[in-house]
Length: 86
Image (cartoon, rainbow, N blue to C red; front, top):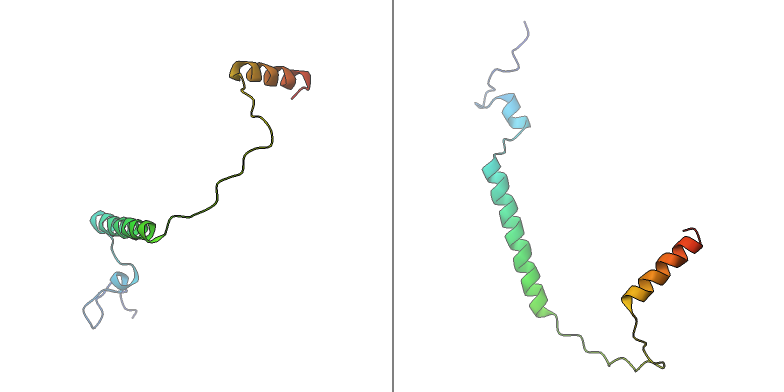
């Protein structure tokens, strides 16, 4: 005669309760909130620990920077797109 797999084992726990632990919505939310809080705390402390980078200022450009008209630039780009067929 075969044993019923649903019967309790000698230690008092059923076989399927050992295989899959039960998770509740509350335990998942608490775990994710703790993970988020730990990540934020680590990020904040890491941000304060890093010194400000010091670098030399960029050299001036060797040419004059022209002032662009956005409407004219858009019109030229559109016409160029149509002229070259994409």
